[in-house]
Length: 135
Image (cartoon, rainbow, N blue to C red):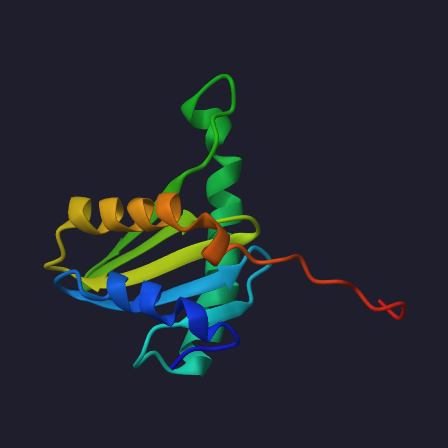
């Protein structure tokens, strides 16, 4: 299943071919699901998109803890008992999120995500939403 952007479905499916990868999402910087990989329920995608939006914001805020110059955030990985969640910036106004089981090769999945973002930034970009006059 994909939402709104079927042209990125193949990109998300490519990420789920890494061993133990489960789901992949493209989300807007403000936390809305733009597209999700096949087999990811839309309601789950929407909940994860909203929570991961906050996670990336918190991760960005930690930059000054890493470097006196306030380094730029690149990736967040969260480990759970049964797997991982990976989050990176992807094109203008977008983030890429992938979940994987505990057996995933972390380096391989991180590299694949970074490679896709590097190769396809325009395809992954999300235009900012226009606000109506009512707010």
